[in-house]
Image 1 (cartoon, rainbow, N blue to C red):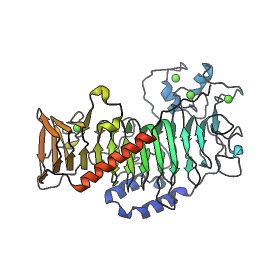
Image 2 (spheres, rainbow, N blue to C red):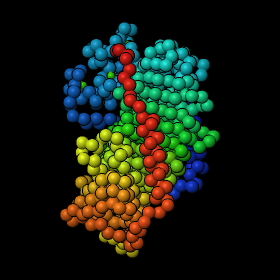
Image 3 (cartoon, rainbow, N blue to C red):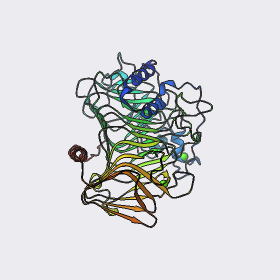
Image 4 (cartoon, protein in one colour):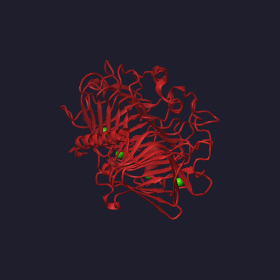
Length: 508
Ligand SMILES: [Ca+2]
Ligand SMILES: [Ca+2]
Ligand SMILES: [Ca+2]
Ligand SMILES: [Ca+2]
C-alpha cells in the first residue's frame, strides 16, 4: 500500500541525534551508549534482508497456504494482504467475509483512511491531507476511522479519537503544541509503529500531551516512541496503553525502541514485552553495542530497547517480559513499579540493568494476580559467582523493593547464561517492607544492603540468601520511606486515571 510520499522531513534524524547527545551529560556512560545504540540517524546500510516470516500456518482465511499473520507481515503493495484496520485479518478476507464494506471497490476496507498529504500543511485537521478529504476524528462530525500514516510527517493540531492507528514506512506523528491535543485510540487493534526502511516511524510527544491506547501499543521493527527532540522544556507527556510490545522483526533493518525521558510517564495496564526471540538475524555473541553505527554487514541491527531515564515513570500493571537479545535500562530517579512477574528470558547478561529504584507491588497488578494467589516471580539471570569475591559483580537491580504485603519468589526458570548451572541475582539495596514475603527457590540472591522492615524471607531447596559483602540494615531509611510514598502516590494516580475502555459503535 504505497501511497504518495510527500512532506517527508529528510533532515530530522541528524538533528535529533545532535540534540540527544547534548542532553545526555547527566546520564551514565551505559545509558549514553544505549541511547547511541538506538540512534536511528546513523543507519546507512543500503538494504534489508528479505522477510522470513516463519509463523505456523494457523488461520489461513485466503487459502493460500501461508499463515495470515505472514500474509500481513510480508505484504507489499497489495490491499488484499494489508491490514489497515489492525484486526490481524488480511483486508481482502475482511471484505470477502463482509466484515468490511468496500463500496468504492478499491479493495481497501472503507473504514480505513490514509494520510495523502495533499493539503497546504502537515496538520491532522486539514481535510485535503486525507485520501477521502475528511478529517478522521470521532469527536468531530466524521466517524471514527482506522488511520494509516505512510511516509508522512503529521502534526496533531486538535484533539482526536480514532479506532486504530498505524504509523509506518518512516512516518512521524508529532503530538505537540500548546493546545489540548490529546490522542485516543479506541479499538482493540490499538496502535502500530513500524518501518521496513531505514527511516524510523516515530510517535513523538511534547509537554503535557496524553496519548491513550485502549488496546496494545506495538512498536515493531523501525518503530520509535520518544520525547519531541525539539521540545523547549522538559517533557511531561503521558502514554497509557493496555499492553506494550517492543520488538525486532525479521527482515526489518531497525529494531523497535520505547524511550521515556524527562518527566514522561508510560503506564501499561497489562504486560510490557521486549522481544527479539523471533528475529531471524541474531546478534553477534558478546557484542552488546554492535549497532552503534547502524546496521552493517558485520554487525547487524541494534536490539529492541526500552529506556527509562531522567525522572521518567514506567508503570507495568502486568508482567515485564524480556525475550532474546534485548536491552532494557532504567536510570530514572522515579521508581519503576511492576505488578506482575519479571519474566527475564534475555540472553544477553549485560543488557538488562535497573540502576533506578524498582518496586514489586502486588497491589499494582489490580486484579491480574488474584487467580495465581498473588505471587510475583523474579527471574535470576546472572552467573553465580558467589558472594563478594573481590571483583564487583554487576547488579541486576541497584535498588529493589518488595512492597508491603507483596509476595515475591526468586526463581531460575530460564537459562539466561550458557553455563547450565543454577543462576544468581545481585542486588545493591534490597528493601523488604512490612508484611512482605520473599522466597528464594533453588537459586542465589546476593545483596549488598538489606533493609527488612518486618517481612519474611524463606529459602527452598538449594536457595541461597546471602550478603555480598555489606552490612544488614534493619531499620528503614528516610529515603526508602520516600520511595514507598512516591510509589503509593503514583499507583493512586494511575488508579484514578484508569477508566474503562469503551467500545466504539462503528460498524464495518
Ligand atoms: Ca493466508
Ligand atoms: Ca484487516
Ligand atoms: Ca474501499
Ligand atoms: Ca535464569
